[in-house]
Length: 126
Image (cartoon, rainbow, N blue to C red):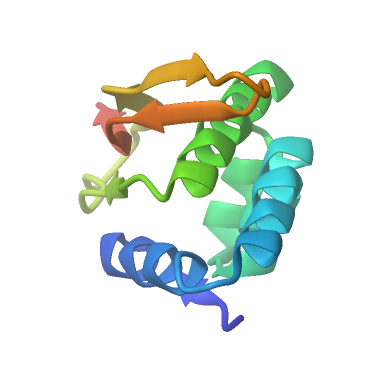
């Protein structure tokens, strides 16, 4: 799979590409993103130096949480979007958050069945 830019359009293109994979290949991607969210992002997106540095500094708990959310979405082919506004000029702090409308259940064989959407959003404080 080709690397995409870390932009809203790049995330949309990556999700479209993923959801065209076979179920087996998609399950492997779901396992990979859950196992190491940061590495999966690096393997699938072209990152600027500042984006890669920010990703490297992301707390492990939040990284694990993001990976779990993505994994559930991948397996169920749910929408994932990115809101990434242009940063302000001057000094600022960057925040990464996710919000979702996921409804996740375990079916009879224990597999996750989910509906909903996942959104990642970058915000800035000056």
